[in-house]
Image (cartoon, rainbow, N blue to C red; front, side):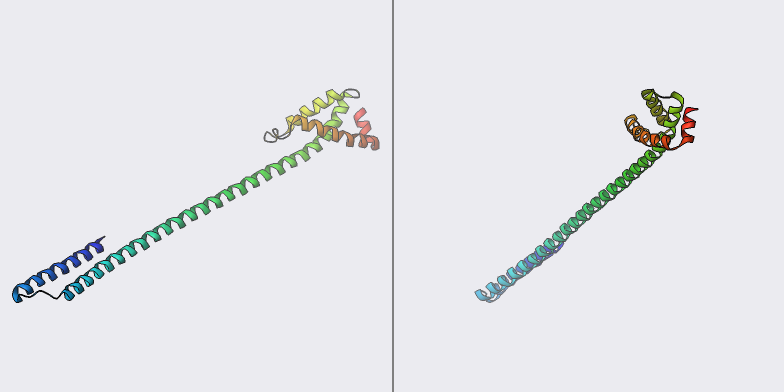
Length: 186
C-alpha cells in the first residue's frame, strides 16, 4: 500500500510541477506550451502512474496466490496427516483385534484340553445315565477355571458344543485304554 501511495504522490508532484512550469512559461513568454508537449507529458505521466499501479497490483495478486497456495498446501498436508493417523489407528485396532482373537483361540484350545479331563472326572463322579447333570457340572467347572478376561469370549453354549466334540474323543479313548476305563469305574 505504501508503494501505491508513493507512486500516486510522485505522479501528482510531476503533474503539479508541469502545470506550475507551464503557467510560469506562459506568463513569462506570453506563449502557450505546445499541445504536443502537453500531450507527451500526460502520456508519460499516465503510463508512469498506470505502470506503477500495474506493478503493485501484480505484486499483490502474486502474494495472495502464494498465500492461497501455502494455505492449500498446509490443508492438504493436514488432510494427509489425518489419513495417515486414521490408517495407523485402524492398523492398531486390527492388531489388537487379531491379538484378542488369537488369545481367545489359544484359550479355547486350552479349554478343550481341560474339558477332556473334566469329562473323564464327571464320568467317574456321576456314572452312566446322568449326561445332562455331567454336562452342566463340566460347563460350571470350566467356566470357573477360566481367567476373568476370557469368560466373555468362552460362553456356556460354546463349552457345551466343545463337550460334545470332546465326548467323541473320550469314548474312543475309553474303548482303547483299559487303564482309563479302570480309572473311570473305580
